[in-house]
Length: 420
Image 1 (cartoon, rainbow, N blue to C red):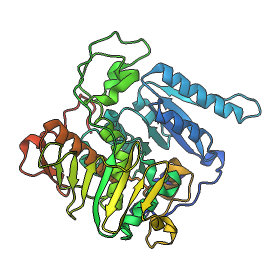
Image 2 (image 1 turned 90 degrees about the vertical axis):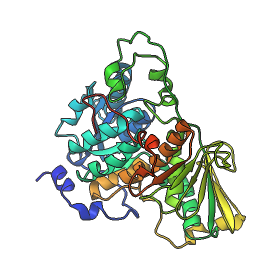
Image 3 (image 1 turned 120 degrees about the horizontal axis):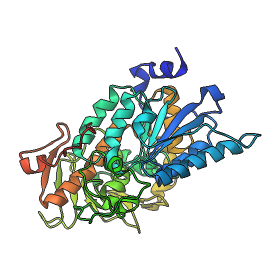
Image 4 (image 1 turned 180 degrees about the horizontal axis):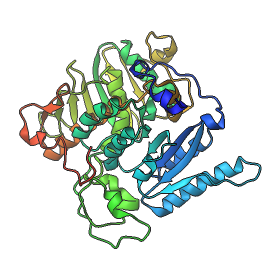
């Protein structure tokens, strides 16, 4: 049995073990490196690629993009990085793909990083898992609630090590873990509310047709999304503004910050039970309620930019990527002394946590269900906005209560052959 088969066959006990802390990945012999391919090579994926190229325990062997310009850039970056590590100054070992399925068919590929637009995440992740690959997928993990519901079991049954790109759980100096610990350990008293400031939902796309550039495989870019002609505002552009491809900034940044709220309330396998858009039932902003009575509002972060403020009967804490503040201030004097089982993983960031878990077969810090449940909170908010009506949600059944209109928004048809 080779190393890949052995690691993937370690069984469900390690995979189901709770996340606490993992050892750092040390330098590995060349024949024991984790081989990785990168699908979608713009934006965040390029940053991930640069980090992977610095890790001696990893070998990037393939890049894939429907935009041949971006693919060439990623290919050249990879070849040059590895050439610089050789005395000869030369390297030829990275393959280029326009169709990710050809990459997934490689038996020598251990894992993939998926950095495509949101509408591709679910289908591509399931196909990669079925091909026996471990996966790091950018957030938001899915486009629809139906995808969020279905992807959990589809990934789980493969034994795949799956990390969602929600770096706030492992990075930023532990600021978010500290805030979560304050809430979980009752340092704020009884929780009253949380306030999450991010952007709004997406809208319908009405962009006109433009000629498709020769460097673009437009049909593959669309994938499971409905067909529409190319427009440069979609690629490279503001595809996140449009409903066929994204839930807008509400699912983009919301997948980060609402995730921290879910974590703080120990709701990683649950979610809100009521959602109300602004202008209804006295709500001035999008508002969620959880079964424990805690209210979560879209807006009200006590700082500039995007962030979270937790409010309890004994105090409050505000946190973003740059800072954390509490009222009273002494709540933050020695947060490391608080009881609890949350701590930063002993690894090199979010990618490092994923790579560690590939070796140990444990679940990473932002496993598939965490990614799916967190983005579902955002998707519920989008539907409340789009329908302009209050909603009742059952997080156990993944259905709206007595609301066939809202129920119709749980999922959408996909273009063949891109099913989940």
